[in-house]
Image (cartoon, rainbow, N blue to C red):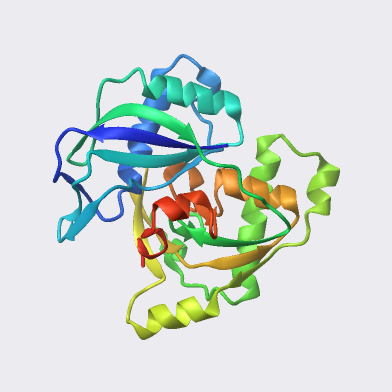
Length: 266
């Protein structure tokens, strides 16, 4: 289930860093801990986008000039989603970077058709490797057209689907088909224009800063429908609960309303 959260912006022109997922992750974690549902304090089966609105880019980051700012938040667990939204709307104001945001409304994303072959676009970077203290391995570059790229995402997806408790051992065993095919034309075009589809991003855990490599490009995923649906609702790759790995179906309503999405992290 994916919902769009709408905030009113009190101070137009305020800004957040270009990549601000870590600020959102800190705020979301704080909101989760505010409530009284202890079973959700360590819950990680959710995903979210960056903030969207009318922006201008400067060296400081993204300056927002629209009266409203939106955030896409998603989880397969309705109880958790209801809990989070209720806690969020109990707050009079949130401060993200320099933005003063007031929760205003929510609207459910329009349903999309998910099959066993889906073309996805990245809303936020996909992380293939976990991070650990004083370890640079999470920044290793892995070419998207290799089996290793698909295999790492498959292993992580099955691990998270197992942890969700929503699938039987037999179902998980049947989910062996998994192949990610990167959009070669897009990657060639990005490289030809001297842009990047893979960058190093900051990530915080227990106030410790880590760095991970994230990938942002269109791709087609071949996998069973339940796997595709899980990824659509919970993200792809490591650290989905910290705002990485959110994807959208090419041509979906989110993309129609946010035309800059595909290039946002290029």
